[in-house]
Image 1 (tube, rainbow, N blue to C red):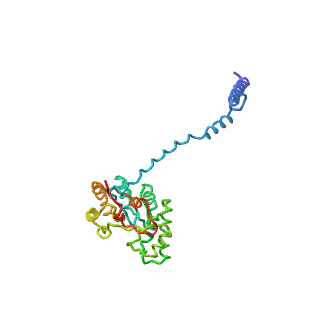
Image 2: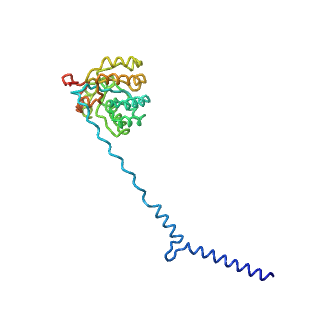
Image 3: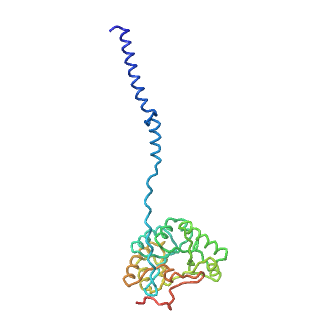
Length: 278
């Protein structure tokens, strides 16, 4: 085939190819009855905006059972001072495994340091209370000092858990008329204790266990410190042995029927109140 003829053949083939390409592209443009490229993109975008199925609502938690009637059963309140601390994590595991709720009297600066543990205590159903910000002797403190110690602790606990305590345990059990007046104004009851195994002095798990088990009676409040691992390790046997004797573990407000008067001091359920009746 000569040169001009070959050129004409090649030009014709190129024209056919170009027509085919343009014809294919035309199918991607909008037309009657067709989607086209822009339409396809719009459809894809619209599909991506379709709301995803809403997650199923969480089931409503079951209401808590009513607290024990401490006029009819042998109640005891376990309380823990000076935390939270790293050892509090283990204690919370122990209490959860035995389904026991306790009362925690928190140091404000520790609550600010471990807000996750404050939240965990609250979410587990434990009672959270005030133990001053720096473990100060409130019975000898000025009004300004008392207010600072209490309000800073209240705020640290509130930021961490969303709750404001209504109980105070004065460090060293040191109280005064001034403190009583202030706690009454702040809506806080003063909670002391009946059983003190001196676990802060005797860092001996066996010693703490024996002291508590020998001393507990119905209506008593037990003082322990969750900042000491030796005290935390005593808790399982204390709970198990007392439970075997028929004791029921309650928070401090439950021990007194949920009624605590601001400013008043509470050491134990009054001996005149019936306890452990059949």
